[in-house]
Image (cartoon, rainbow, N blue to C red; front, side, top):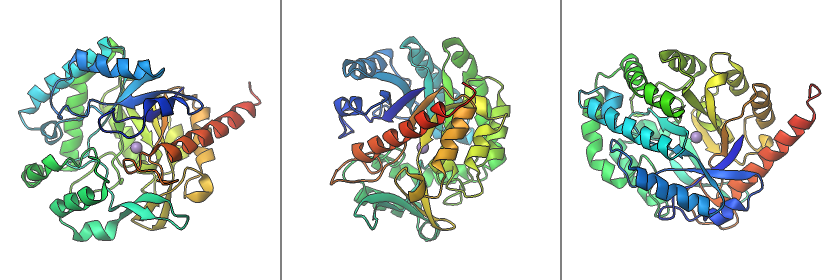
Length: 359
Ligand SMILES: [Mn+2]
């Protein structure tokens, strides 16, 4: 297993690779070419430059998070052909650069959504939080202003300010695009790229929708155990797989995370794990917590145990962390609390491994 941290590149991240390297057990990072807009083909030289930078710090570029999907692919417009061709070029170049994991999402218009990027907890730490009551009453364009104000000067993936203008246009385009249609569009995309993934052994890992239900009236399709089964069945290739993001899938309390991990139709397709915990206030209202089981609503031991039992040997990273010890960084992506998350996971994993009597 590779334990990694997400790194946004020198230009977009306050966390240094040298610091990531000091976290015990971390072998690499997942990163992205954040300045390449969705739909454009990634150049081999840009990928190699990123890879060289990471390797110079003694780490591996274990995967990409994310190669974003152009909205026309998700909507199923005729123009998707061009963007799918570009996506295939990006995959080919990643393969040539010896990168074999790609995280992506199929969320309509918006990436992960939160209503508060710096909710203060009793201990003085700050966390990301979500309140369905606010989303219900807010217009998407206002949401951008909210995110911009609260993101400490960093640009959040999916919420780039330059996207604001296209948003209302996109809402028009998404009209009538049902969940069924979006699932068909996902299949169309997967069928088109899988031959390239097979050739270069690139594991595609779709990230669950976050939160795992429809927001702003846009249907979401990666939200439940049943939807993961459906997606696995869209294309039989092992390279058609998942990012098991505990916080995103778990945002819907109906989702039983250890059960999903053990599901025979899903388990072999889990290529990437985002390990984190959240705390519920009530249905539809939650905040992110430290990784510790007792600080949130998930049993992180049971999640780690399920991963151990299925023989998980992919890539794992701590997900969003709290902002602690006065750190200023991208919301959710400070160094300190994510490092604590890694340490905690390492402890769980060692204990599970050593108490396995079958070994
Ligand atoms: Mn995640």
